[in-house]
Image (cartoon, rainbow, N blue to C red):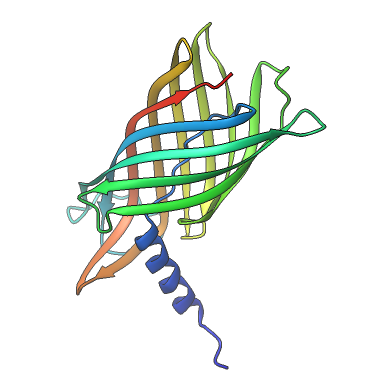
Length: 215
């Protein structure tokens, strides 16, 4: 049986990524025991540029940033408390996208909270294994009585690094705030569909997120 080449594996991965859509981190660094739910509206902007030297940030007139799509994301997860006071959560992402190449996207992942709830901050590590596969580490804490911040970073199986941030304000049992992500591809990602090719250099996401707390 013929073995797949590296370029063929990457091409298959890009096609899988294109049909699945980009993954997002929809939860807090400190997850709740039991049911975890969140909803978000995220706008996606992509910067396209013909391929050059990887990580070349020089200005170029051929580079352009355009609005790509709006995603409506619902995340459903369940976290169990472990004997060491840590938590383990599995979750499912479901998204509908307006003006996207493909209108429906799904993903599934897991998250391990490495710190107990007794600490003033929380941290953990996770992975999304279905959809757009990626691995990430996450940290978060409260700043003030009712404001919280989460920061994350990681890498994707589609060669890229990404950075993530959430700023949330508590309103009773609901947390509402801003979510932002930035993904930088290793060089330019060549995506071709129906005879048209786009060389994606980076993608930026900005939106609003709502996280209810179940006590």
